[in-house]
Image (tube, rainbow, N blue to C red; front, side):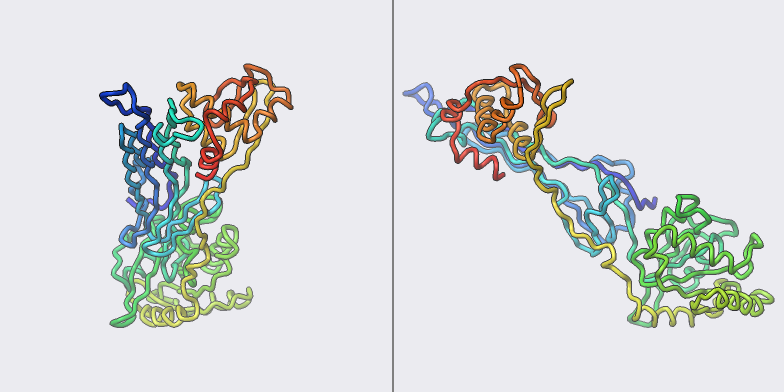
Length: 443
């Protein structure tokens, strides 16, 4: 099944927890700490692959989680988790839930790091400092990055074929290419974009995209047009197919104007793309008369598009049209760079503290959230180390100055704990040093 847009929840693996352990010997009960550090969580990468033409693999699997790192062991560190590789079609755009493009994977083989796995928590062997040679605590693994993204496929065709439903687009592409679209005499026969490779000579060919019919109101999501208009945003120019004798009896020129009006409302860039017009049904009686009438209305309205009279059914005029398209492609090649956006990892959040009268204190920031997430609250020394780091970051002093009292709730990320106004400086001297604090801030 063809799927060209989907929302996926991405989660990188968490780092493995560190371990508290001690070397035992025959002569001493404990010789020293030997708890290992946890392994790093798996990253999430997105890679484009030209052999994939749909996002259907995400239809029933919208949660993509990388594995967690292995926990630390006695005398050994945990193993790093394997990375998760998500394969998508070439031309896939990655957007956040606000609709902003954060990456445009416009080339085959592109690979980006979408979510970073968490670092492994240090075991007590790695937490030995000059002020604490016998640590009785370890770190928890850092959580991996987690968020929802939207994948949207924008096809990389050379030419996009547009027009109202049932004007002969599928018949034309079947006639000139190796595509075999479903064809019938009723609207919305085409439910997905059809791609056809049109040979020009022994070496060259053109990739055409037959876009499902646009109707009035397509820019607001009516019909099928809005769902697939993105697929012609990369094309160099558009082939506008017009039925000289519409099945509903409407005027051919009015249909041309209405399709262009929908393009304008959907995207100004799309509306400004160069177009050529293919008037279909040259095999019908009075085709030449209808052709001249259409061209007269077109010029009177100020349009300058070139016109080709063809019959998608019999093939009349299609060979000449294909050669003309090949010539125009040299002047109007596919615009692969239109949506090019290089992925940038989320920036670190600065430290922020705010007070909610009903709930308590909310502390946010990349560094403090990472430290709190890796703190094992069941270990006294681990909690004391957190208190020392909060003191060194100026958080405790800020809370004191702004009226925080013992027992006030502190919210950091998903964790809540109580504020205790105590002198943490002595604890910092005993259980941490500058090197340890710097490591947490740098990671």
